[in-house]
Amino acid sequence: MPKHNEQQVALKADQQIRESKRDPSFAVHLLRDQLGPLLISSPTAQYWAGKQMARANPLSSLEAIQEFFERASFGTLTFAKMKKDEALVILSGSIVEYRLSEQKLASFHLEAGFLAQQFEHIHKVITEATENNRKRKGEIHILLKWDRKDALAEE
Image 1 (tube, helix red, strand yellow):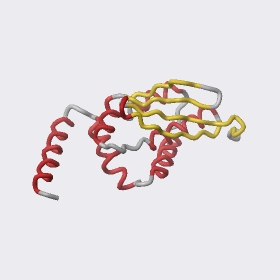
Image 2 (cartoon, one colour):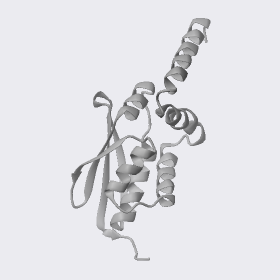
Image 3 (cartoon, one colour):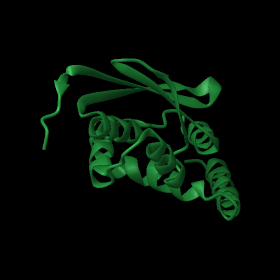
Image 4 (cartoon, one colour):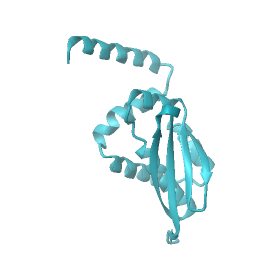
């Protein structure tokens, strides 16, 4: 790397550290977008890690999921459309905008997996999720789909 580029990278890092004193999302950025891909490089593995995180933190309502996302600094969760076999969820907020601006291909597979598992837990039906990056709007659309015929066995 040329010396000029190294200086630019160092200046950007200095600026991020100064801003991190005011922005708690800096820790999320470090863990999710810098360390996370090194530990869990596959989007599929990130999705399943999100499902496992949801199993460890089962929630009982859509409102509880929204609160969890806020507390975990994942972003603001809005349930945009609810149908009999799918739901459109929008993830937005300053942390989402920041992640999208810092990393062009920021992954939200962890959040998608977390949502799929929470819907399974709440609705007792096998649920899958896919993410769609809406960078221009600074938001992520996550589509949850299920088939009522794929009900989970009662415990």
